[in-house]
Length: 422
Length: 164
View 1 (cartoon, rainbow over the protein chains, first blue to last red):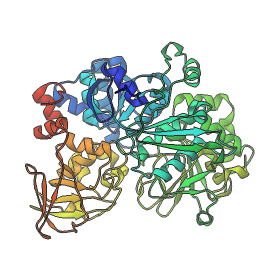
View 2: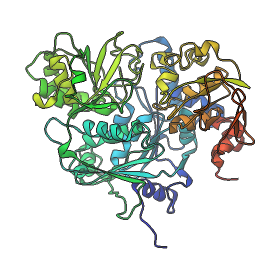
View 3: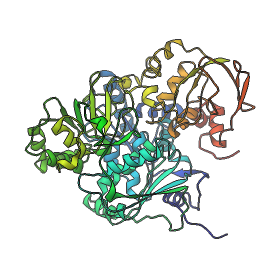
View 4: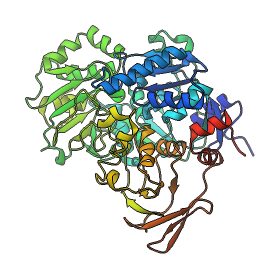
């Protein structure tokens, strides 16, 4: 029988393991980058001490991010941070302290490379897939083993292929594409599988938009969300002073997929996910949204807290004032995003619009601090999850949308079609 | 033998261990008092040792917090039964030594008396007089489960090893 081609996930894992491996096989793979954050890291490190492997095999590629409670709003969290810093100093692990930004964003800017196997103790580690890496989230103990032994076990995933053609029209962002996909496949439609992206619509898509697609692979239940490494990947790495780290990676043309989905980006419209689940997807023009007052608009998170996201929001509201009863909170995903916002002059635009700015980090998205909504309040957020209790209050309601939908909503105080303002 | 605590589809890790208790993650006994609070507020105070959590589809979807299976186990639950599990929760459950059993839970009602025969791969619903079969874990997960979790496995073996 002829050798059949490899999917992106199979290809990267095969290169790492040193032989062709196929969906369904269980392998032990070397790990190129392992990281934890302040909500999962303390347990990781306690487990590493228990296992007798309180060390980093490759300390330059083992990273601690203090991002979820940055700066700490409570003494218990401050104590967790004390432990993380002490462990990092003891083992030589790289530390990104408060103010540096969300782990996945900073990892992408500085550490994730094409062909890497990346494991992070945070589910949105899958965002690294946009670099042409096999990046997946795991629990604390698994990542402790990856840091301490330099390896992990993996079941090579089957792959779903999402072939995108066309360009996103005015007012529509890749957030609308991934929400549309999640509405179609539902929140376990890619369970245990790789959500692989390709097609001319991906080739012409800038990196910051690709990152949103990979970021939400886990919202479909996916193990990873890889995208080929191409000229755009190279451009991104050059812009970050990392040109030598670029390598192309693409699936074989005769790779076998569990299922292929085709989307024409040019026909997409802005959508939101209504409270409770990321797969409750409706068009922004849905009549059910018309009478829902939005008390808070949140622009941030690893999903959509990049400079380009903040800039899209700011340019859409420039010279305007926010709706009277709608608070606006912007949280840059990283220090880089924050600095670029300042340099572009858009920070002033945001402040004059009536927004407040958090320091870089996760802030309100996981419900720790930085914008927890009140009982009965509605939030439109650019983040990735809207489960009950997600933003810290089980009696609040979270809608998910793009930065442009956030802008239109902040202008009018109800969920508004961004095509009317850009 | 224990009682079934029935939950619906898509029980997220936020429902199992909410973000507003983030500051309790290094204080697991306190965190465990809030287990599944936003799904069934009475659960943590009333669950008895040996009881089972019974979910539907995609149990444990969402974040990577290993605290989710840990607090379920700390409450005394003997295991979680569901039609399917989200992958990170499933892996974390095994790593925490909490049995996560994939089976057809439709016939199980809240409060049913359940027993699990791990050797034969059978869930017994004593209330209904029914037996539900479940498949064995992949070898590496079974090996981790046998030791009581991944940390215990590494302490014993010193390394990750595939196969028998």
